[in-house]
Image (cartoon, rainbow, N blue to C red; front, side):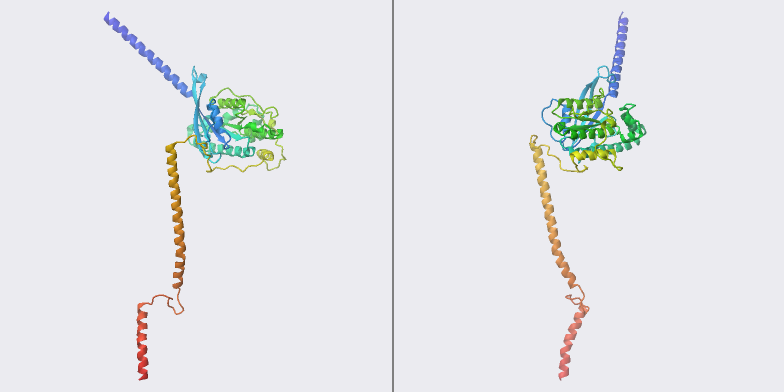
Amino acid sequence: GEEGAKESKTIEANREKEEQKDIMTMVVGHARRAAKSAIEATAIFVGSQGAGKSTLMQRYTAPDREEDPKPTPALDYSFTRKEVKRESAGAGGGKEVCHMWEIGGGSTLANLMDVPLTDQTVKNVTVCIVVDLSKPNEIFPCLTFWMDRIRARLREIETQLRAKPATAKVMDQLRERARKRFSEKHPDMVGEFQRKMMNLSGINIVIVAHKADALADRDPDMKKVMGRTLRFVAHTNGAGLVYTSTKDKQSMLNIKKILNQQLFKEAAVKTKVVDHNKYLYLMVPCGADQLKDIGQPPVQPSEKDTPLDLWRKAFEGYFGTSPPLTMGVGALPDVDPKGQFKEKAVDEARAHKEHSLWLYKESAARAAADASKATSKARPAAAAKASTSRPSASGDKVGSKPSGDKEKQRRAAAAAAPAASGGGGG
């Protein structure tokens, strides 16, 4: 009886172990599938300084936060999590992460985009180019600068990826994915001329025209040129376009839907709003526009002008010009103009460093002044020395001390002279 009981306990223990193994196998398998399907998305906000990038990021990540964000002097990072429900994420879905980056300082610190845009993030990245509609003359230089900067960075990444056989075709795959966002029969992807005009980068790009409320009182023709120019730049670069303003809730929902689609693979946004006469806040998802709907720029064409040149001329005719943007270190904004984030220890350390820097500059200035004085004094002395060292007409150096042999000869001649005169008189 005891042996039978022991045997039954052993069988039960082995069964429990097998069940635990099966449960652990299921848990590990589920975790692996979830990790494989999890999205590590990246969003990068670039554009004009003071255009509202920080505000747009805050409205997306923390819409209930009331305080205004402080200006971004260089590079800012935050993240957001979102609950998703998809078959690939498991039966219960899961939380997925999006890394949010902002490049501050306008174009002066554009090279900081190399930090978040890498060969590791390029597969699932969205770049939002934020332009300020309250400063329309700055919009065209901003768009062309950041489009060129993005493409330059993508060329660097493609070089890195092609150096490894496992990733050599990644950028080709991304460009093919970008083409699929357009329908198979899209007229701008069929003809040879149209295909040359379409310059798809391979990554998600959204042009965010912020502070759209500034256009409310503008002339209808100005709204038309603004809208069609932005549509042309967005469409030919395979980007989306959305007008936004913190004063309009629907426009903020529009950009949230577009970002959710691109970052978390949610349902595609199909709403297209392009009638500037009826609606202030336009929205055109990527691949939803057509060149024939955008129309021709209202300027006289020339043989040398490209379509982009013509739209630039039309745009500048209505809104004026602005110098092209360049990279380089410029003046950074004051991150705490109201003194809300004072730290005594940090402020004292900064004051000490600034005082040390001032002392160093003063010392360097004094040293430079002393060196200048010494140089000015040395010049007359050197000139006098040079003049005394010039040879005289007799061959001796003027003012130079006679040599020993010549001195002896002169003394002998002086002593001989009286003797000669005395002997001649006797």
